[in-house]
Structures are given as C-alpha cells and as structure tokens.
Picture 1 (cartoon, protein in one colour):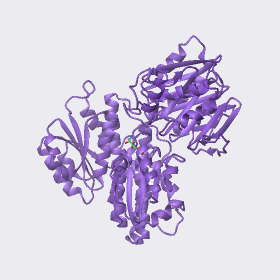
Picture 2 (cartoon, helix red, strand yellow):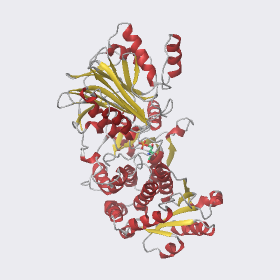
Picture 3 (spheres, protein in one colour):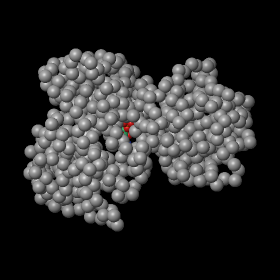
Picture 4 (cartoon, helix red, strand yellow):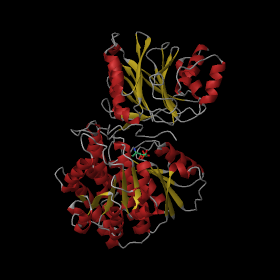
Length: 629
Ligand code: AGP
C-alpha cells in the first residue's frame, strides 16, 4: 500500500520525487522520505506525518539538494512498526539505501540470521532488512544489480523494492514481485519509477508496467529490464495511457472526493460505452471480449470483494438473481479464502476490485485459478494485478479515482454488474426482450438523473447541506449525536452499508448499516434522541415495509433523516430531516434507484466530514489500495 518513486536523469530529483509522492499519497501517508545522490554521497530526508514535512526539510536544507538528479522516495502506510521517522523510508544500511512496498513474510527468520551475523537494524520495519542483504552481497564482491537479484530471492512475500548505492551513484535498480511498479522513459532523458502510472503522467503517457520478476536497471542514459532469476534482458512493451493529466487534478473542486462524486454521470456513460455494444441488435449486448463467453456459460456466480466493492457485489446479487435467475453468492474475499467453501461445477467467480490491487481479492483469485475454477475480474485500473490473476477482466471507465473513499468507481461497478444481469437475463431468456429494452432505456437515462440530483442548487443538495449543518454545529460539531444508523430494504440495504462505511471512513463517526427489518432484532436497543437514523426508502416494492420500520425508529426518539421520492409526503412528514431524490428518478425502473441513492449517502458523509474538518481525501489510517492481507 505504500507509494514508491524513483528518478535518474537530468531534472532536479527532489522536485520530481516530491511531486510524484504527492500523487501517491493516497497509497499511504503516515510518514515519507526521499534519498538523493549528491556529489556521490547519499542524502536522506524523512519524517513522520505528511509529505509537507519532508518538503520543508528539503527546502530549508543548506546543502542545495535541488542539484541532485538521482533519487528514490516513499510514502508509507505502516505495517511493521509505528509511523515514526525512524521507521519511515528510505532505509539506509551502509552505502545502500532502499524503499519498499509490500511485506517481507520471512522477516523474523531474516532478522535473526542478520543479528547472528552481527547486524543491528535501526528500525522496526521488515523493509530495512533487505538493505543488509544487499550490503552483504556487495561486500562479497557483487555489483548492485547482482546483489539486489541475489537478495530478492532470499525474501518471501509480494513486494516491490527500489535500491541505490553510494558505490554506484547514478544507478537505480527496481524489482517488482507482486506489488505494482511502473517505469517510464523521461522524454528529456532518464528514467522514472512509480508505484502506479499517475505520477508519470506529467512526463509521459507511455509507461511500462513491470511484470512479476522483472528487474529494472536505470541510469541517466537509459533503461534495461532483466529477468530476476536468470539476469537475461526481457522486452516489455510500453502502454499508452488513456488517463490525462487534467483528470488527475482537482479541476476547481475543494476535494478530489467532491470532484469524483460529480464525475459519476460521466463515469457511468464511459463505463456503459466501454462495456456495451450499442450497435448490437439486442439490449444488453456486451461488447466482445474474452470474459463474455466465460460469463455466458456460468451456472452459478460467486462474487468476491472487500469494502465498498463488496457492497457493489451485494447489490449485484439482487439484480443477477431477480433478472437472470442465476444463483449468486457474495463473500468477503478475506473470509472466503480461509473457510474451505464448496464450489459447484459450472461456477464462475468474479473478483471485484476498483484498484485491481487488493491483496485479499487477488489471493483468492490466484488460488481458485490453480484449481481450474473460471475467474473473472471487474476493475477500474487497466494492467493492474487483477489482470494476471483472473482469466479475463471487465474494466469500468470511471477514470482515476484519487480520493481514498470510493465513489465513482462504486457506481461504475454497480453498472457493470447490472449489465451482466441484463446480458444473462437475455441469454437465459428469463426476461422478455421488451422488458429488457425498457430497462436498458432507463439505464441510459441514469447519468442524467444523477446529474440532475447533483446540480448545486437542486433540492436534494440543498436539503443534504441543511441536514448536515443542523446536525453539525460549527462550534461544537460533535454535540448531540452519538452515532448514525443507515437502514434500507432490498436494493437500499447495500447502500445503507455503503453510507455507513463512507461516514466512518471520512467523518470518523460511529455508523452502522442495517437491513431495516433487522433493527428490531437487537440494534434498536441503541436508539435514543442522540442517535441519527438515515432511512433509505425510495418508491420501490420495499417502501411500505421500510415506512413501518421508520415508525419504530421514531417511537424510540431517534432523529430521522428520510431519503425518498420527492412526492412521498406521507414519509417526509414523519422525518426530522427530509432529502428528496431528483424528480427524474420517478421515471426510471425502481431497480435502478440505488444509483440515485448513492450520491446522497456520499454527499451526506462528505459534508459532515468537511464540517468536522477531517482530511476528506486522505482520511486517517486508510490507504486507497490495500495491498496487504
Ligand atoms: C472504499 O471507500 C474504501 N476505501 C475501501 O473499502 C475499498 O473499497 C476496499 O479497500 C476495496 O478496494 P478495491 O475495490 O480497490 O479492491
């Protein structure tokens, strides 16, 4: 989950590294640092806390660090050892310095061996140990590249490492084994390394995604890629990126999250156009790609994911079962893996991960593929690791999502699953063509309906603002509210879970999501006037039952925020706060209402977080891609 940068060329290395790390902070941000080669000596500046601390150290430095043209950098999400300056990367061991992303699983073993040989690590990290291995190999006469290769085979676990040595200044060596590492040739000469392609975009759109077991050897003169085991050169094609620099900037929004909430209509249009053959003779014709045949032959589906992607999977189950009559089970990747599940013949597994890098989801897919179970992926990031671990991947086209809280990738995942449901319903003839035509027409309308709701002066946005303002007094933002419940039935239940997760993630409020019918089986005991219950009750077939549950909540004195149809006066009268859905949503099939509810729960959390003054895009303790189990 950490972010790595590396550079060698003719530009000012600290500038390149610090700008790049800023774009990687979503991967971890509890400490950071850079190591530079200056006059053939290593200079390391690192600090706990945010990257600004390191920027300041560099700015204030009398040594003219800006002159350096070679260096490596890191932004950390702590696994081994607290987020302190001591544990921050880069780690220097003698003349060797490194940055690392991932986990060294045989860490204790290596540490014991090193200690018996008289070495004393300074940090609590697993990463630092790698430096001792390289140092030992170099002391035995190996050059840096050989020493890195030799040391890498001694460690277990998925990781990427980038290393330099004072003995070979101007050389940067990076290895990928699991955790992503991307390299690119700087058009002005030199080479860039990064944990993902975003920091490379200001320089070039042509990047090389290293494969597992690739060693990139870079100098200001050029780049070679070698095979880790044999040391032989390997050829890797550059990929031309579709993402532009503009897409990764905030475009005038105060936070990436808000920008990304507003990008949802566009994300849906692009995802639809990417996955569906709009010229096809029938509705829900998936554009030809390898995964389509695997999906078509499925007799049963297992959807696996973590976090928000798991909520998308829960919703997908409703559509897939009710439209296509195909049995679907949904599991958390981290649980599925260790519980010896029974998988019947004909089952297709779909791993859902917007980043395509989530360790638990990837690990399950890898294991299942060994057992010859067909595995598909849904991801937003082309060439991410999921493309290796699944037989085929369907890509959403939400564009880069930088805010740690998933928003536009979530609705794009929902759309992908809904398209699968429509496609399978057609293939399995469980819905008539006229029904599917009508549904598809409504799917096409969805971006407009969402855009209507997101208009800054829409009733929906105004009521969300008013509600959050009332519940979050400026001087005492925490007063009067002990916690939040989100509740909904049917399609609204996964959105309730997602609403609670969003609020926890970015506003640090205690929040839980419940199926409305479950409240009376326990959680209702928590309700009193200090609890807020967000009731998701759009006009669908569950509306009446949810209305009754709302009455039960009211009777316990909780404050109620109702979200529903703009004309649902019966419901709005019962609520302390009322958020109407956009009027256009009355014209679409109720099965599609989760798409309209999603921006409501996202904005509620966003506004609350802003009023509470949290770091919305980089909430504490989290990272955007969770590459450790
Ligand atoms: C979403 O807001 C969270 N940041 C988190 O739950 C996330 O959805 C989860 O870590 C899974 O990530 P993935 O989709 O990249 O696999």
